[in-house]
Length: 293
Ligand SMILES: Nc1nc2c(ncn2[C@@H]2O[C@H](COP(=O)(O)OP(=O)(O)O)[C@@H](O)[C@H]2O)c(=O)[nH]1
Ligand SMILES: [Mg+2]
Image (tube, rainbow, N blue to C red; front, side):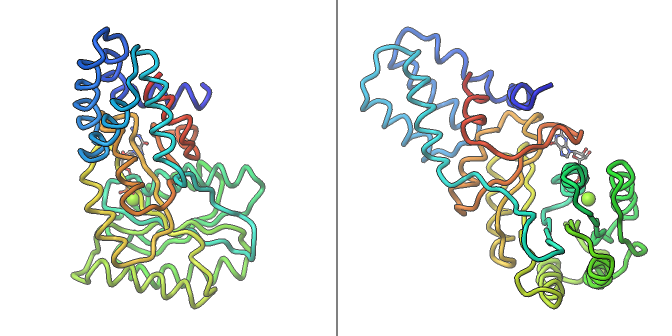
């Protein structure tokens, strides 16, 4: 299936709620309903109010125009929200993935490993989520599926030492790209945020321009609650952007907008399912079309 139809299908839970607005004959009613639906899909109260205010000022007569104007406003709001990772520059390129347990880090890394390998790059996965044995095994499964190498140590190992040794391997064996899976929790009582900072320091010992991307992975099904995670993580580690997963399971697909506006960091990838082809780069036009058409 083509990406756009996947995205559209994924966003269905969110987009379904908009349908009745655009067939409404009464514009006042349509705008009131729109505000309610924007809030319900977790676009944020202030954003919803602002959008409806702008639309009211335009004095639109037909609901079909309403959709077009709304599209323009949403695309405009997402100015700067598209991001692209660069595989060029001094190798290895190091990409670090953060996020709470279950947000979709390992799955995202697995999908990306395959995509990057298909671009003829030598990819190494580093299993620095040493909290659960299953997390390491899950990354091993993805590495086999993608046909890329993995570096791991036994469960409970110090995540930063796993990264250190993994990067030594990457340098020695001339890998192009390194994807690092981190933990949302730790096996010992160490403070997670302190550990994440340590990971970044260890990476900088190899290349002070690395990590080349530090991406926070967010689960769309929790909607605006992810703003709290953005705040928490960005206070402790320098983030460069977001990955939004599970847009397919969420009726809160509007959350992407407040997430972007909260930090003004780009959204690099979005996930709409569990397979490799269910991940792609974020396009604001496609997203807004998927949401409203
Ligand atoms: N439906 C759906 N499920 C996803 C997506 N991304 C991840 N998952 C699932 O979410 C669960 C947690 O993902 P995982 O990668 O293990 O999260 P981690 O703890 O952050 O590494 C797994 O069952 C994944 O298959 C997505 O885009 N859509
Ligand atoms: Mg994981």
